[in-house]
Structures are given as structure tokens and as C-alpha cells.
Length: 286
Image (cartoon, rainbow, N blue to C red; front, side):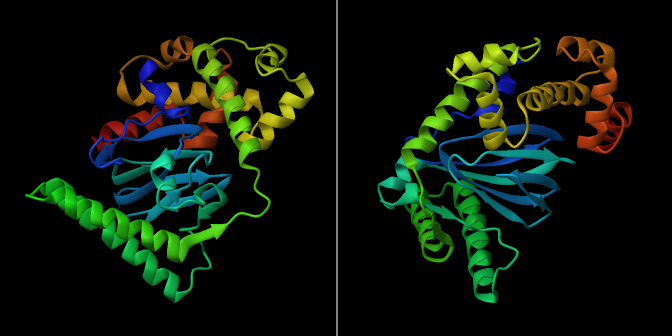
């Protein structure tokens, strides 16, 4: 169960000492990853499959050939409706700061429904660079690191030149404090998600009054604390449902989901079908 922790809340990412970024091709089964964030910008290029990416409460349905960018510290969730093959690129914010000094004051807007033909052309170039990075990284021919890093900087140049937007009235210090508090809250939740957690107790962890804590959490996470706790439980249940042959009652008990009616309602809302039908569909896919 501990291996789910990296998918929830603050995500710690190990970056290559050579390239300074994380780059890989992944094949992921159906999955549901509740809201989390990390201190890097993240590209997800969907080679094959379908997924719903929700970033700062804005949803993007991705299909073959689509690309989404998640800004550093942006709260986001992922829902995979089928097996996905993706290119994943994560660039740590402290690496970016060396070359983009105002990185804390800008965001990159890659996915905009109002993209002009020129912007679309630039987006296509970004996708082409990612595909070429994959080719170079997979082949690992002599001198590949030079080529890979040159492509990385070409990608960053495209981002800074064509997709960067200055944030107005940004309070970087306050944002860091808020994220630190959220990290404390969500770390505690990861360790205790099966239990009934009193709002007063979780509020005390970050020295908030209960009412203020509820407003703070809803503002930053988009849902109430109880709703989020249920999402975390749901993610664990979904993982076990598609990766084990255990009975549903055993899985629910394992993850502290004692209200079957609530579970069934939430499951159908998130996945569009009953647990057994979803399990059957996944088995048939495999």
C-alpha cells in the first residue's frame, strides 16, 4: 500500500544526475490518482490511450497525440480510462531557475482552447521535440546526452518564448507556506486515510481553527477534506480492484470504506460503471 503514496499529495521525484530531468516512456494500466503536486513542470505526451487530466480544477480529456503541461506546484489529478502509453518529462523548478530567473512569477499555458494557428504550430513543434527526445533517449547512441540536452533547451526556449504568462500579484512566499501546510495535512492523511479523522484534529496539525481549515482546504484542493479522504480511499480500492482477485468486500474493508452505499455512488460517479463491470472490462482488455 505504501507504493500508492507517491501518487497522492506532494510527489517526490528522483531526477537523473546526468540529465537533471526525469524522462521516460511509461505504459500505465487504468488508474486513478487524486490531487497531488510536485516541484517540477511536467509534460505528459499521450502516445496511445485516453486519460482525463484535471489541473487546478480545469479538465482536459486527452487522446492519442495530445500533450498536456502541468506547472510546478499546480494541484492536479489523473484518471486513466484504459491502458496508456505516455512520454513523461519532469523538469525540477530549481534546475529551471538557473536559466529562467523569473520562473516563480510565470506559468506556462500550453493547453488553451483559444490557441491561434501560430500557437498551434508552436505546440506541434513542442510535440515533435518530445518525440525526438524519446528517439534519442531510447537509442542512446554515442554523444546522445549532448543531443538530448540540446533538445531539452530547445523545448524550454519554445516554452519561454511562446507559452509563458506573467502571473499578476503573485505572492511566492505565501504560496510556499500554503503548500507546506497542505503537505503536512496530506502526509497525515496518507498515513491515516482508513481512520475516521476528526476535522478538529487535522486542523490542529497546521494550527488552524476548524472553520478556517475547512475553507483553506476547499480553496486549495477544490473539495472538502472528507471528500478528498474518500477520493484517496477510492484510489486504493480501484487499484486493488483491477490488480487483484480479492472480493470487493475484502478490498473495502482493507481500505476503511465502511459505507457501501457511499462507495458505490462515488465509484459510479468517477468511473461511470459498477465495480464489477469495471473489473470485467479491465480483464477483457488484458
